[in-house]
Picture 1 (tube, one colour):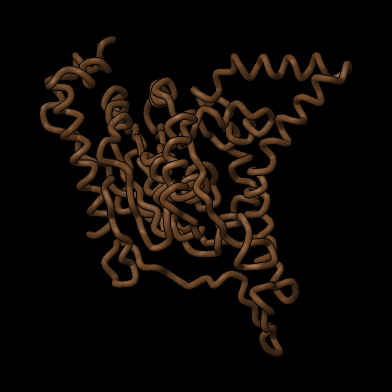
Picture 2 (tube, rainbow, N blue to C red; picture 1 turned 60 degrees about the horizontal axis):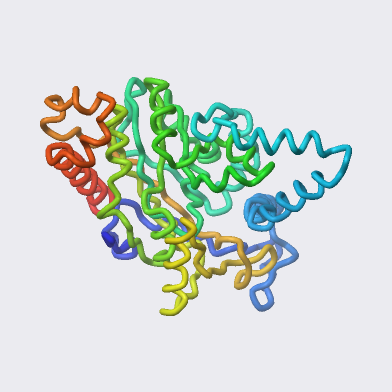
Length: 367
């Protein structure tokens, strides 16, 4: 993996650490209520409680997944609901929305809960340059962290204000295809504008033309296993699929760094556990690190992320590699993907674009 160490405290990164949001510290007009053993129940401002509730609702998704499957099974056993749920399950199998992004809802993405979710940390967006609305882009988000909260909030909702920061662009966030196999919950992901991380999604969405943006968390599950507070270890050196898809679909690469993404959870790692997680990731395509954060009323135990700021810096579009025009015909043909994967000229083109992307990413981290 390519490792970039987060040196914000020393002032070496592109973005300062920002305000220290120390969980739900409180102060009343007549003094400060001291929290006993890291537990706070009273005297916390209502605004912060609403933010905590929004994040708790998001984290409940970890438990909603089995509930969705159990509900579907129970409905199948009911003679009155069987036809409806059976039709829905068949529809799930043939539904093309996960690879087309056709059910993205602007109204849902502007739901107040997403603003409260953003304010909890808070999550702040920054740009180093404008992106031309007449172009097409593939944004690579780094790092994955435990869940990729910065990417989900910034590109799967309008909470942090991505459309105001980069107007004229339509964002679609890639996620694992398995997320669209969960009944009912899949509809939420689709309303947020998420799509599965397959080449079909890149082709279908970027074929919409100008202003379309596909966002991919490049490191994926392998990078999640390396997430730890105070570090930014990226799995990137051999990840070139997103580069090929950008070339095939005439899109430009744009790097994005989420400073603070890996600080949201504490992780528990041992050598044997890491080997087990890596094996699980190879077999199932994903693996969840053993982590813990805070709870609703305490700051030391729970599955909620800590209240720590995330600053997401979106870079400028990476210049296309030299010589690209000479191979436009080969790339745009039906054998374009094979050309980029197997032909030495195509592989060199992908390598040059990948190297330019890495350089731009390093500039974001330490300008």
